[in-house]
Length: 317
Image (cartoon, rainbow, N blue to C red; front, side, top):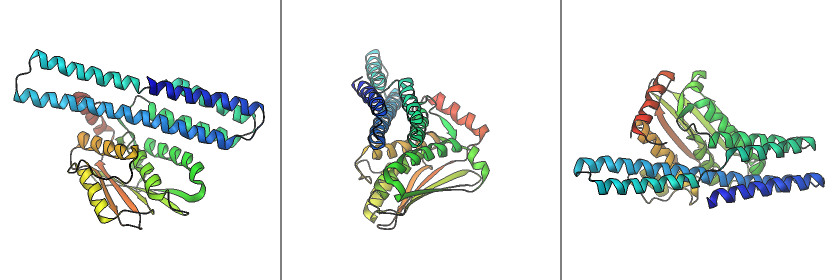
């Protein structure tokens, strides 16, 4: 609840600030942009907290199934499980915010910006609104690759105001039909963010990210490459061991929330599709990094089967 109130307070403050600045005709793009980025970070942290709570609920269910096979499940143990589950549900509720309040605030800022001739700010708030709608929407299953790419483009547009012309992004999709294949929602953005923040943040100029997607008969392989600072052999090995689930306390490319996000994305892929799929990294210090995502090739027919599997197993992702 405190987190939700904090987010709403920031948004209300931002809305009031924008009105005052517009009325006084004060150049405020930089102030507005910094405030909007704070909202982006807050909402994304809320989203990650919610996903972490869902992971906890899945682990509780999984442990229950294992314990049932080993010992008799008496009433006292069942009650303990219910208590744990209720705590998880309460935590998830505390992580939610009112999305309509957020959208309406951004729409108000956009309208005022356009009335004042600030078309760039109007475009920025429109992109932010699309970004939030995708992040907060209740559809957490499989989405078309086209939707994920559009979300990445929104994220890149937002980050361009921070990095200016220091970073460029390109896409290479092997065939048009790939756009209509399916992928777990919010798979790409955490990896692109990781490439920007940890790979390219210290690059003075000409930072590049390439998102390449190819497909075989059974798999889709997505490679997110950057020309940033790269990783040493030891750090790379620890990261890949963590992605395999063979190392729990490994050093990620940074200590921010994004390390948790990468682990969550990788875990979702493996839990949904099997241990043969997931994320693998290639890198050399000073020569950039490749994040390689491997998932099954999921067309419309297979999507129904996988989403039914998700519902039956109640994974909560």
